[in-house]
Length: 151
Image (cartoon, one colour):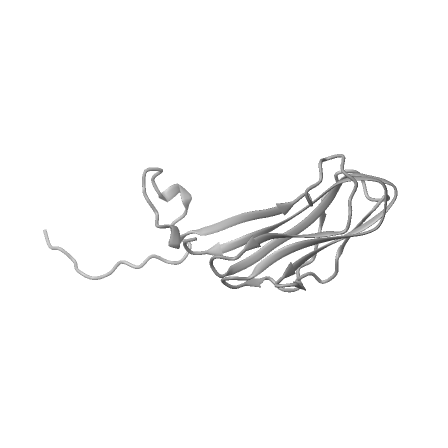
């Protein structure tokens, strides 16, 4: 039997999850890592929102912000707040996410990202700005970050 020498190169995307045995070890630097960075602004589920900004993630490997969303457990009776996702102190949203008493309780409101690239050392923070908070409770916001390589 003759042996062939050379390199076998598969088409991109031709090896998928079902082709890899559950006992196979894949190096971390060959994987995409998704992080869900979030904050409840240090408030209990029944806590009234106050203006505050929280650092939620420091980028370890270059990647992409995939999503930003916010919600309030109870949107109150006369309330208006905005959420902003910032990279190194600058917004990465097309506009802030606004939630008012007209928004349904626990409705997740997605933000529109205007800048998605992140580099090693970038600091992501989420800001909550309160205009009025009558009856509003339990603010929560999160972003999803994809980092391509070993943490």
